[in-house]
Image (cartoon, rainbow, N blue to C red):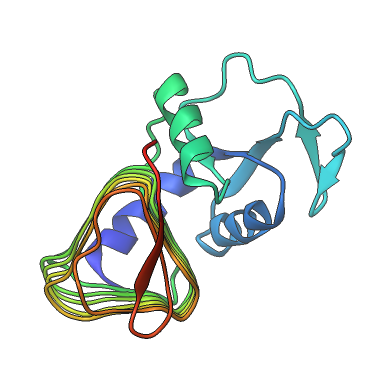
Length: 213
């Protein structure tokens, strides 16, 4: 087990972690915290119809959310709004069955699921999701609030802008830059730079929509 994971594990054993959001992604986050030997203090969700998730009672009051909370919401823009409004300060949560290079950097609030690889000199921003079995090669730069879906493969020197979502199974060749607020469709193959606000599908990837957020 690398030094980064040992440090994070030690920190989480000392602190109860709260989870914001109570849908499917929250189940994975709860499981991750428990795998690391941490404990879940509370689960928060504003949907009053949700009462319980994996044996945890759900709290509906969002006043004074704990700083040691992880936002377990897949939507990048909602996750950003909650994180920005509450100044959350939880270190990255890293699954024990992932591989993170000792030369990589993970910022606060990011979650790393089982089977993920992050190679040397890659940097991952705040409150990102690196989902199951995705691969981040050397020298990649992932901005804040990005969601990398399961089985995505990023080759070396790829850059991804804030709040972009890379869909399940997508592939990005080396040296590509993808802008902020983009959606890369499932299985897309990206061989050209993608501007901000683009929705891209297909092999090779083609822009089908542009938006300004």
